[in-house]
Each structure stands twice: as C-alpha cells, then as structure tokens.
Length: 74
Image (cartoon, rainbow, N blue to C red; front, side, top):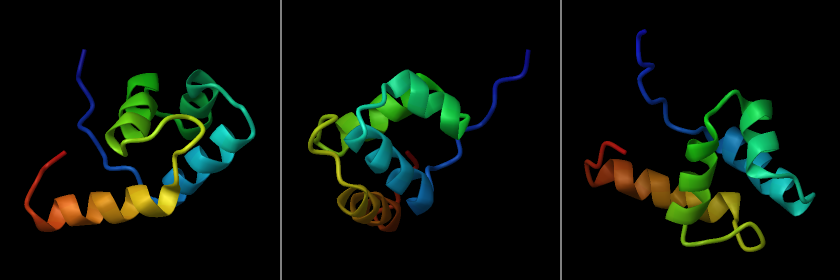
C-alpha cells in the first residue's frame, strides 16, 4: 500500500472548515467533505491555537503562510 504524500490545505479548504464548524458539523463530516483524513482537520484546528468555536480561516491561512516563509515543511 502506498502512503499518500501530504498536500497543504488551501485557503478555500480552510474557509470550508470554518463554515462547517460554524454550522456545527463534526470533524469526521468535514474530513469526508474535503476528502481529507480526520486527523488533518483536527491538526489544522488545533495547530491554529483554536477549537471548533474559535477557528478562523483567515488567521490560520496567515499562520500557514508565515510558516512556509520560515521554511517549515508542515
């Protein structure tokens, strides 16, 4: 079995995560909708220093862009 390589979340995916969380959808439902692993959604929300009620896509995107500029791979 081949392991898929990680593909960064796009700004559009982060917006969708934010909308879905605001609508009360579960991490499992969001992962299924985006075709991502549940762990990816969980990691995204937690790494933004947020939870399902405070996650903001714009802030998460800026944080991700800053991380890329600093040379972080994930």
